[in-house]
Image (tube, rainbow, N blue to C red; front, side, top):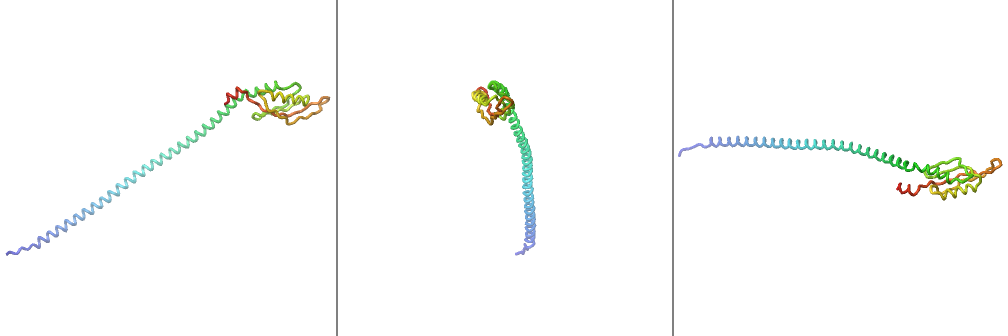
Length: 188
């Protein structure tokens, strides 16, 4: 039988397999590196996109906060204007009240009573004057109490003084100015 030497062929086949294994290993390493680089790139793009969205949201939040600040300022300005309008409206409604006060004082002032000063604080009115006698001051208080526009008379002081041959009573009286029923209904 002839002798065939298969060793060189086997040697060649082993070298071929080693080359194929090296190429496959190199290909796997290159593929793994490409996969890792691709994954890193993909995630960095996702992170960059999210950062852009976050920056946009932050910018929008800043703009909205500016708008909210402006709206708050406008609300405060609106409240101030409404308060001013309310005060003006109250002043408009109370405009005829002073006329009623003076008219009623003239009507209720008894003969022999003279006013020297009149001061109003809110609805409370202080009147100072001179009467021929303290009974005239009492008559003034009764007429004030019976008035539609005036009420709650209170005497702070009545002093009888001598003025030449005659005596007179100096007085201070407090009273409240009332609104008529029709004006109260309009105000409510």
